[in-house]
Length: 127
Image (cartoon, rainbow, N blue to C red; front, top):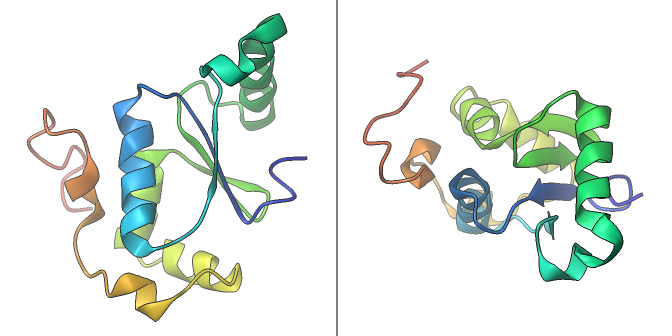
């Protein structure tokens, strides 16, 4: 229900640098999202976070985080979102979801700048 009732949902882990990559990137674009940190204390009782993790992974057939949904549709993780932006594929999805404000806050940079600093170069080159 979370995925279908929110325009953007990020299933994430609190201490995951790639989760931070995606949220910092969307924050820079001034795009609102719902973030579900499945490893947070909020979801500890009755192993709820682990149950969410298993359900999301089963739904997407993906075991890594973050997992990024736009209008209820799985789009991938942080690197996927960065690649989609560079290819001009993410912008229309966000616009169709009604999330384009001020031309994405005037952002015209390379979203790979939000990757963890230990990754000194774009891991996928300039594809």
